[in-house]
Length: 374
Image 1: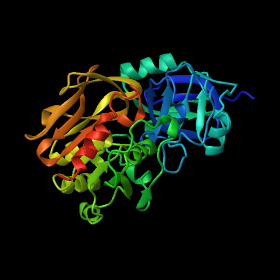
Image 2: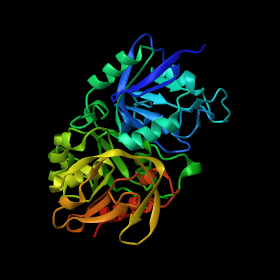
Image 3: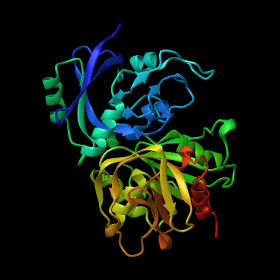
Image 4: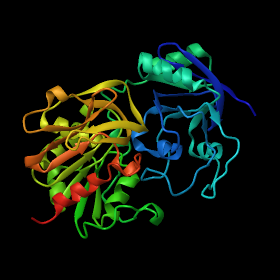
């Protein structure tokens, strides 16, 4: 059954389509409308907590052909975190030996509203030219949906971490599937305490693959509480929202710098910079996808990376003692920093996501080397 629906942006632009997934039922679903350029990995996108509060547009033209399986979710709860999902064409057929259900059925069961039949090329070009902005999906009239989009909370100043972090500390012990394991055990017994700001599961698997013992703690955990767990190293995860608004985690990171080896990814990169006294700002349309070129300023190598962020570190505000280590080749924005004297470093991209596919996995080895007894 065809269910006409539409996406309306806050600037009044309308994109018509067909609803699939969860039933709209005369309601509007709002969020920041963004796009991701990955040709595959839609299940990982749906379940990545960093997409909380966002309506995600896939630029690949057909989505859903390999279905959904129980092994690939990136969230602790294995459930989707996107506010809504927009595609050009939802595949009517599922063909994969790993598939447990088709995409439409999965989204319906998980309560995720999605749109098919949207001109995603036009939508992506509009977001590139005018910037990411709030939108509303629904089967209501365009004027009403536009009002909903304009009334939605702005991403700037929004703390979404509290809604995706774990409720209590727990041990994580699951390795990557054997077929995909490439790291090998190199850090037997090292204890990593991971600050969960909306952490992707594959990051934790990567630490387990290296032989680490991993304890995950909520985002509100203080530096004193982290140190009381006797970690050999501290990891600061990815997550959603405006980094400057996560003040409690910034204070935690500030209290940990120099106390233990520290490694941050994505939001963790931004929080390390903020803890050091630098500033962050919102990008026009962000970096989302698994084909982002990054220059390693130390080695001179260009690495293909996976990214998902709408904010960036202001390189001009980095304090003395902090060094930029990576930059984005498309726009020159910050992609990595280090404080050598404090044994702390971070990257804006996701080395565990295997975009290269193995270009940046060495960063996990760098961190575990820091944790080795001197």
